[in-house]
Image (cartoon, rainbow, N blue to C red):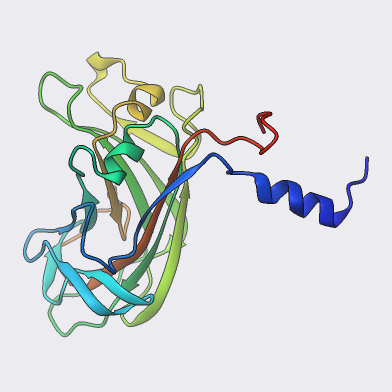
Amino acid sequence: MRIATAGLVAVLATFDAAATQVVDDFEHGNINQWAWIGSRGGPGNVNPDGGNPGGWFDSHDEFYGWHPMATSMPAANTPLRDALASGTLHKVQLDFVRLATDCFPDYGLPSTMTLQLADLHSDPGGSASLAQTTIGTGVPPEGAPWQTVSFDIPSDSEDATPPGWEILAAPELGYTWQDMMHNIDAIAFLPLNPDDITYESCWHVGVDNIIVTYGDVLFSNGFEP
């Protein structure tokens, strides 16, 4: 059956009608308590100018780390905490920038960007359980312009671990993907692969327009996609 182009566009426009987005654009502070985590420097703060556009979350110069990350452990009743606890995550998108820095040493080895989801409370031994995925987008060099990075999250997958993802948890927990989807406490973005063997290096990095999409996704007439 052929569908007219205009009709197809109209149908696609109704997709995500029931989804909700949490947007951190850093125009009015840091509502969801993002922090840059490294070995020295951080946790960063909101810079009101120079983002994509306007405000952005800046690590500042002379921020050091082996595997630097922008992370949030949002407090109860914040928009991001509600999204992470929903069990219906669909997508995380953000803008990333890596600014030139004069500190030493810098990091120039090739790598790929990573999203991590963390369960901080299910292991009685106190260890965190992680789900992580990397994408083919390479880490930009110093001085590169803002770059949009996007990660899809198949929250309704029935696989023990969906393709492209890795779960790191204590074996005795028998931890599954659905366990993670219903127990997420924190989220992190790394501008490199955490499995890379790295060295402590200097970064000046920032994020902006962090968009977390979640919720039951339905067509507007009520049937599931």
